[in-house]
Amino acid sequence: MPSYPGGEAELNKFLASNLSMPDDARKAGIQGTVYATFLVKEDGTVTDAKIIRGIGQSCDNEVLRVINLMPKWYPGKQNGRPVTVQFNMPVNFEKK
Image 1 (cartoon, rainbow, N blue to C red):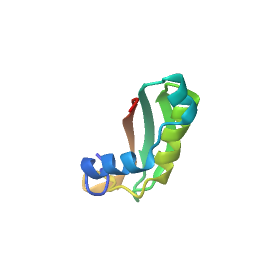
Image 2 (cartoon, rainbow, N blue to C red):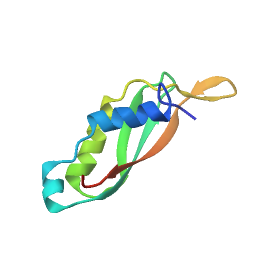
Image 3 (spheres, rainbow, N blue to C red):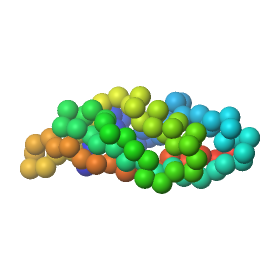
Image 4 (cartoon, rainbow, N blue to C red):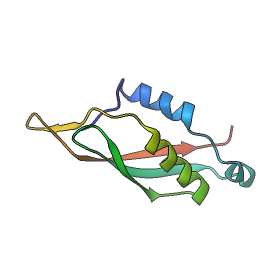
């Protein structure tokens, strides 16, 4: 499986510092989890981000925006060779 540089803790830090609750979603009291999928290519590039299950257009678009900001990942490997891997990621939005 591919991995984010620095591991899951660094991925969580990246999401926390770059993801923000859209104003319209905050005002509407929207909460929930957006499920996204993307490809981590052989060179670690993150591409083809899509929403699998969303909670509203503004939150869904925010998740896609942040995924597209991600640095290169360490690619997945099969038989010691880098391969493209589809990665699914939940992103939680909650009121603070």
